[in-house]
Amino acid sequence: MAIEHVFLPVLLGDEMNAYGMARAFYEAYGVKPLALNHTNMEKIQQSDLWTFREIPRLHIEERFVTALKAIAEEFRDKKLLLLACDEFYVKRIVEHKEELAENFLVPYVDATLAHQLLTRESMYELCAQFGFQYPATHVCTVNDYEDYNMPFDYPVVIKPMNMTKYANCIFPGKKKVYIAYDKDEKDSILRAIYKESAYRDDLMIQQYIPGEDANMRVVNAYIGQDGKAKLLAVGNPILEEHSPEGIGRYVAIMTTYHQELMDNVKLFLEAIQFQGFATFDMKYDDRDGQYKLLSIELHNELSNYYVTASGFNLMQYVANDYVRGSKQQLTYVRNKHLWTIVPNGVLFKYVQNEQLVMEAKSLIRQGMATDSIFNYKDMNAKRWLNVTLDNLSFYRSYKKYFNNKGMSNT
Image 1 (cartoon, rainbow, N blue to C red):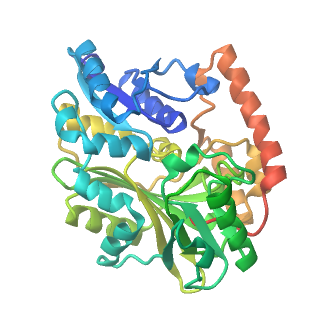
Image 2 (cartoon, rainbow, N blue to C red):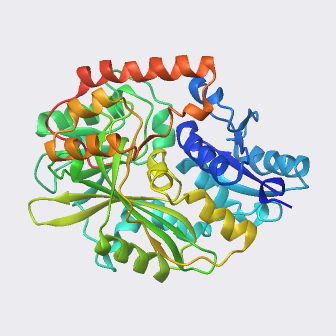
C-alpha cells in the first residue's frame, strides 16, 4: 500500500508555516494534511493541498487532548503524524506527549528538555556549554521596569518573552520586537507595554548586534528517533520583514554552506539527545567575527521551505523516520537555491548587499528560485487574486517601514 494511503499529517497552528509543510508533504507523497485551527487567511485556506478544519476551543488546556483524540478516532485507519507550526502548540504537544503518543506519532522531545530549550535564559546556559556565543541578555519584569538599569550599552532589543499572551494585547505603537537606541526610547517602550497594555509577563532586553539582514543565518536540522542527525542546512536570510507585526520574519533566504555551523549544531543536538526538528537563528557580529545564537525553535517556521526547495524535503525526513522506519544517512545541504515570499521588485530594491542581489537575479534566471506561497500548481482563481493582492501589499509595507538601521535580534 502506498504511503499516502496509510498516514496523515495533522498540522496545528500558524497557517503560513503550515502551508509550506503541507506543500512539502504533498510534493513528497501526494498526501493532503489535515490543518487544524488556522486563522482566517484566505490565500492559505483556499489551498487545495490540505483539508482545513476548525476545532472549537482547541487551544484550551482542558479541551486539547480530548479534541485530538476525537480526530484520532475519526482517522483510526491511518497513522497520524502530529506536528506543531508554532511555539504555543509545541508546548501543548510536549506537555501531553505521553497521552498523545497513544494515538499519534509525536516527533518531539519530552517536556523537560523542550522547556529548557524554549526558555531563553536556560537555553543560553545550556548552549554556552557547547561553545555557542550569544548577545548579552537580561530580563525585565513588570515590578522593576520603572527602575530598570541597563547592564550593557545601547542599542538594545526589547522583546516579550510570552509571545502568546502578548499577541492578545492591543495598544498604540505595538510591535513584535523593538529596538531602543537610547534611554528615552527604552523607557518609552517599557511604559507603553506595561502601562498601556494588559501584558504583565517578562521582557527580554538584549544587546543589539549591528548589521544588515544578510548578517543573519538560520540552521535547520532534523534529528531522527535514534538521536542521530539526518539533515542539516544553512540559510542566509537576505531580507526580513520590517512591518511592526512581522518584524524579523524572514521573507527571502539563499541557501549557503557553512560546515562549522552545521557541525556545532549536530554535536549539540546529539549530545542533549534531541529528536525532531530544530531551527537555530544566528547573527554574524562584525565586531568580533562570531556568529551569535539568538534563538532555537522546535517547530518549522515559514522559511523552512528553503530546505525543501533546495532539493531536500524536510517533511520527507520525518515521515520516512516515523512512518516508514527508514534508515537515513546524514546529509549536509550544499545546493544553492533562493527561497522567497516577496515579489522580485521588493527583493531587488531592499536587499542592501549588491552582491547578494546579483546572486539572487542569477538564481532566478537559472530557475533555481521558489516562492513557497505563490505556487502555480495550487492556484485557483480566488487564491490567485488573494496572493496577488498580498504581494502588492509588500511594496506598500516596505516603502512605509523599511529603514537602513538594520533589523532586530529575533
